[in-house]
Length: 200
Image 1 (tube, rainbow, N blue to C red):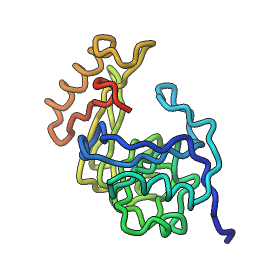
Image 2 (cartoon, rainbow, N blue to C red):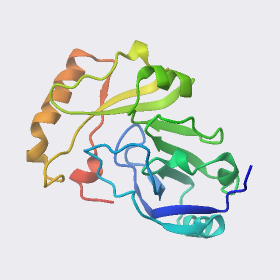
Image 3 (cartoon, helix red, strand yellow):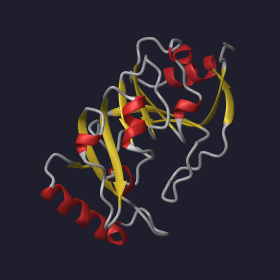
Image 4 (tube, helix red, strand yellow):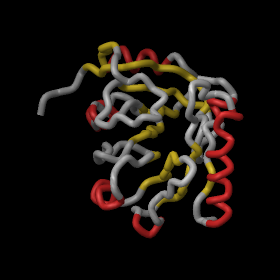
């Protein structure tokens, strides 16, 4: 197998996790380019990036006083491997994935926002730390019994429209998700607070 020594990176930044079970925790986000899906509601331009050596990525990460890395995208499993992660010893590795591929074994925390069927999820994962389903009015996530075991099952209201950071434009989706959780208490609500707070 060819050794991987370069990653195509959209951005590296230091911020709080804005959603899911790790909301509010400080993390270093490494956003990798490329995706094998094209979701209409995606809020990230993952189509371009800069080639960086592993050493350059590690140097960028090491400037921050934090030991949690969130590998995100796009779809990070298109580039991320155990070989790559082996260069980042001492870090707690989280991944945000669409569920289309298995994740490297060195990943410590899996946050999956599925874009595939429960059947494929069961093939790719024995378990995950959290599922996050972005939904709008009228949409329903799969039954929990269909999914691999998870510590957390979230639904997240879609932020849509030209002014994605304006709460008022998305109030119907939020209300729908709250009502859904009230009727299905095994699910929890996860709002993308980084958008509401206007933080990266």
